[in-house]
Length: 135
Image (cartoon, rainbow, N blue to C red; front, side, top):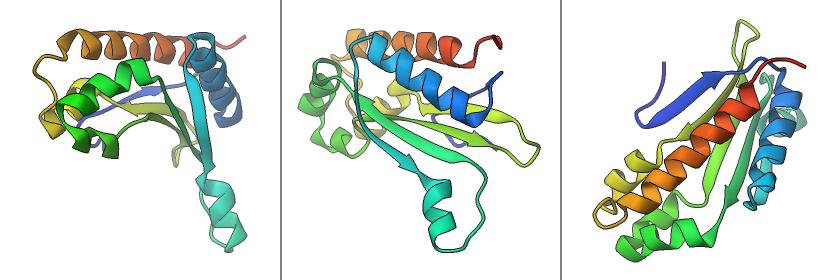
């Protein structure tokens, strides 16, 4: 199952390496990583099992601000985030919200087409770099 607006691609790397590759790919583009949330570690602290599941929150005000200027509620979904998880078959995935879907969700898709195209292209480039062939 893939939720509406989510882009998910299988990774050729384990969850830890996929997460490291996300960090490198994002920061190499001058985008700031603001937070890292390890859901599996949090679950383990309360005695619950969870396969590797991490969220990285990252952004660039030059990209996100125009969307919030159009519709401030976009701030609920910004900064952007990526999810790295391992499914029940042991496959690692990299997922993120489609910027166009986020903008449509908040009515911020008019007059922001150029920003959205750039965001979408950047995320697609990051995804290709992150999940690429094994070393």
